[in-house]
Each structure stands twice: as C-alpha cells, then as structure tokens.
Length: 333
Ligand code: ATP
Ligand code: LTN
Image (cartoon, rainbow, N blue to C red):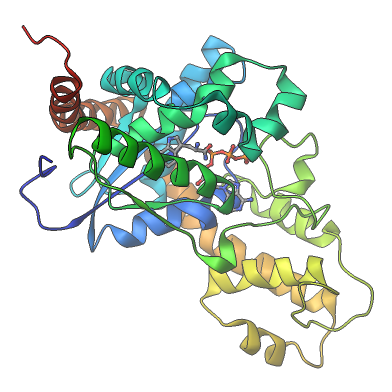
C-alpha cells in the first residue's frame, strides 16, 4: 500500500452531492465534523457531482450547484490551505476504479442497499443509482482514507467499501486500507421539522421541513415556529414519546454546545414557545457568520480553490489507481 502522503495525520475523506438546498442536517451530520477534524486529520472534501446525476439533473443547475456547494464548504470553515476541496468528476480515477470495483460486486448486494430501495421508487431504476455505492467505494479507497464522517444513511455504503477493499486485497494483494465510518450519534439523523419520523431531506417538497443553511433569519424563525411538536408542553428528552421535541433539542444542543440535560433544566418551567424562540436565536447566531462568509466569496476565488484541490487530489488518486491496475494485471505503457 502506498502512503497517501508524507503527513502522519489520519486521512479523512467525505463527500456531499451538489443537489438542492443544503440544510442543517447536512451541516450537523457531516460538514461540521470535517471542519472540526481539520485540526487532527488530513481532510479531503469532495463534491460528488457524479453521484448527483444518478437522479437526473439540469446541466445549468448542476453547474451552479457545484460552485454553490464549494462556496458553502468554504463558508462553513473548510480551509483550502489545510484541506483538499475538489470536484469528483475532475478526477477520472474515480470512475475507473469504480468500474473495476463493479466487477467485484454481486448485483444482489447493491439491490439490498436501503438508499437504492428508497430512491428507486421515486426515480425509476437507473443503472447509475444501483452502482452508486461502488463509485462511493472508489472515492474512499483512492485516498487510503482512515475515516469517513457521514450521516446514518451512508453507513451501509461504507460497510460495502470495507468488503470491497478486503475482496480486492485478498484476490490481488494488499492494496487498499479498510476505512471506518464516523457517525455522531446525536446528529447523524436530523429529522424533518414537519414529520419527526422522516429524515430532513433536500429533496422534500415542503421547504418548511428543513432549515437551509442560507435561509434568512426571518425564514428560520418562521419555520421553527411552525415546526411540529408533541403532545404535552414539557421540554423533555424522550425519543419515543416526544420525537419532535427531542429532535429540536438535539439541534439546539449541536448548535449551542449545551447538553440535553442542561437544556431540560434551562426550560424546566417554560413551555415549547419559549424553547422554540431560543432555538431560533441559537440557529440564527450560528448561521449568520456562515452566510456572511458565503456572500463575500467570489466565483473566481472558488474556482481557484477547486483547481488547486483537483491537482492535489489527482496526484494521490492516480498513484493508487496505477498500483491497483498493476496488481490486477492491466498492461501499463
Ligand atoms: P438529502 O437526503 O438531504 O438529499 P443526501 O444524503 O442525499 O441528502 P448529501 O448532500 O450527499 O445528500 O449528504 C451530505 C451528507 O449529509 C451525508 O454525509 C449525509 O449522510 C448527511 N445527511 C443528509 N441528511 C442528513 C440528516 N437529515 N441528518 C444528518 N445527516 C444528514
Ligand atoms: N453518497 C454520499 C455522498 C458521497 C460520499 C462519498 C460520502 C459520495 N462519495 C464518499 C462519503 C465518502 C451521500 O449521498 N451523502
């Protein structure tokens, strides 16, 4: 196995799709961790545009969203001096290794993936949607990633990545490192504001079900105000009997750093109304600086960052792919 870089730091890779409106679930479940872990890890932050097209995308919108997500990653605190921020489709090694991994993956394993089963209902059965996890495995394995921070919905794909790494290594010799998922329990599944049994999702038809990172303060306040609550009026944490309030409490905790018990104590003699009012304040306080940084970034500066990221990512990805192809018996020139 080739060490990805001279640095002794553990390698973190993760990805987000440039689709739709980024929401606080994406932020708390994934991006916030990447930003925090820049101190201790070598971070590869990837914009997964090839994954996004497994659901048909309008070209102009895909283009705009790709730049928009890059801008958001920077606004959320990813530092291009420390981390590699890049666009998946700009590194051909991803699709090439993805293809090789497809030839090691039984169709049955892909058909069993929860995300495939859920999404195929909406989109019709596209081959790209079925093969989505093998491309994701390639993303991860190319960089010898140690750790992959994701929301709960992606764990299954990382399990498959480990299986594929083992399979390839057993068949062709030690090549890939087996990665681990990193899932923060409290924020791995931020639930929809209109229905605490559903995951907060960009693709929801109801914008009031999520708080977008770029929502105006007034919109945030309104959405929190109309968010569903549970029967009773106590601000108490109970995932079974109070799923809606518990979801809002986890969001409060993640944005404020205050523990769930402390939140209960703080609102022990107050009702849902006051809690929601404070929650909106906490969120506006956390999101306003991100929004300010977002507005200050120019398209040209974002493109410069992505170009630098492409160069750094390609160097590592190409090296790993070359080694894998050599082991698998492909002719080198
Ligand atoms: P969505 O369902 O909102 O369309 P996605 O998972 O398809 O989201 P991505 O942009 O690729 O889209 O997700 C980026 C990251 O955000 C992933 O790690 C994913 O697990 C995480 N994530 C998405 N939704 C949530 C959520 N509701 N709670 C926690 N993490 C989430
Ligand atoms: N499938 C992920 C996005 C994604 C990813 C990755 C995450 C693509 N490649 C590699 C972690 C590692 C999603 O839809 N959230």
